[in-house]
Length: 445
Image 1 (cartoon, rainbow, N blue to C red):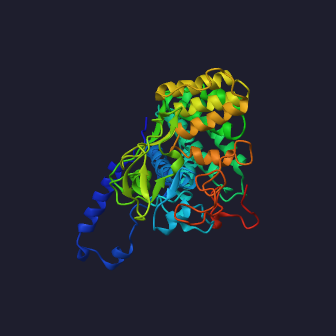
Image 2: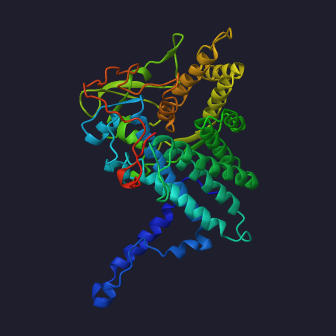
Image 3: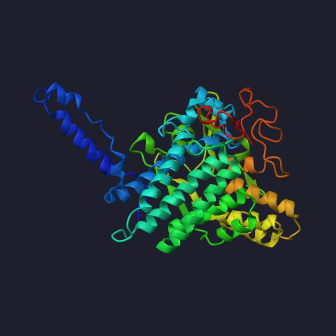
């Protein structure tokens, strides 16, 4: 079963080959030989159909997704109410104050650029679709892992579509028409459904649970609460699926640590917003947020840097899916359907695990109150993870459960300016890069 690491051994091997080639004497070659150069790293497309490369191709899908997800989590955290900008870097300041334009080149940067939320995720999505077709064409005989490989690729492709569907104001897939949130999430649901079928056939619990959490998330987004609950209830509470990170290369760094959370790397370009600091429940500190400070200045030399314990080094893995997320989806789906007893039971189980007092012991809270409490539990439990808070801002917008962005009434900065008196912009969903918008379409929800 492929894990989430990139095939660095193969890359090092290619580097050795290129180094050997470079050591050959130029004098031994004719001018014609010099002009007939093959670009390193370029291969014929047909070479990708070599069955011997099948597992490497699956690993490449996982590697591309892990990097893209890492960036996407940073951008969605910056745009939510979890972080305040604390930097002189213009790009990060714009993202941290919700001033992102469709023309912003940061969105379409490479995976080494932590604000590149769009292009790396589209690459991961395309890779997943393309490699699945190549795997599907392999003969069954001689490839005992074919079904598992296909399940893996479908699950990761589903999550690429989750990111593109949840966060962006509109989306284009493979030069097609402008799609809205529900359109993209419906495609994601179909990919997860295939992954569930294939992972069941392959008897692989890891990918099966990853896909179940993904489909439950999409169904919750689409308002299919019963379907979300059915999927989420089947996921073990202890399940976790991570995007791996390490300190070997900038592409592999945990970007949340590198850009805004860790004390040791040179950049502290954001700080945790006040409503996430010193959070308690009935007078007892809630350890789920784990937010603290050393009273040291952030990058702007003016803002105190607050940080959390979920990204403490460049090698800290980044959560993709988890059992605790699944439990909270069950709680929300139950509350929305009027099953308040189930929602309360899950909330209290999470409180017990955290060592804090229980919730609604007398069972008197209304359906709306229980739903609001589930949203609060998500705020605490899923803090700085997997784009959940940003998605909650968007999916509850215009409802009685609306969550204000920073700069809006009811937020930490209700007057429209931040702690440095810098005005907030109007970004809610991430604009589709202007180079991607069909000429006849206007993006927006």
